[in-house]
Length: 130
Image (cartoon, rainbow, N blue to C red; front, side):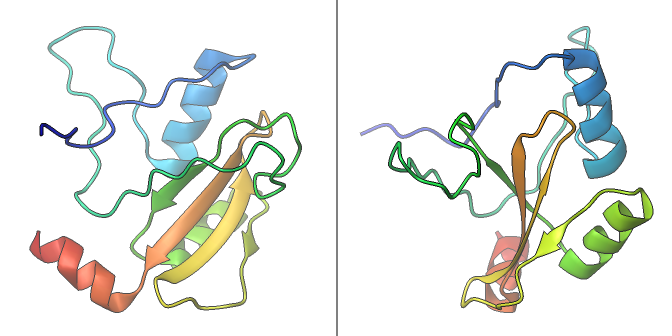
């Protein structure tokens, strides 16, 4: 059976698509979609990706109108949180360290939930060797 290789894109509605794309580039390092085929698109590092549909009534994403949440893998959660804090972006760090790593939450300027994930050390070594 053929299987997909990974996520090739995340497409969602925004009130200000250009402004939101600029925010993601400035604060998270996600380059905007290229305007031509000669400019390379943003490339993520290889590693674990979780594809997890949730029950429609979940409050895990926040407000009921939130239909999605993206989780970005980061090398150092503390450094990333400090960087976002210096830019005036509020980030809530989960105090618990889980077997698969550490997490933090924030929202983009349009209120879309974002989760940052620093994989557990063993997971990071596995991803770096892949």
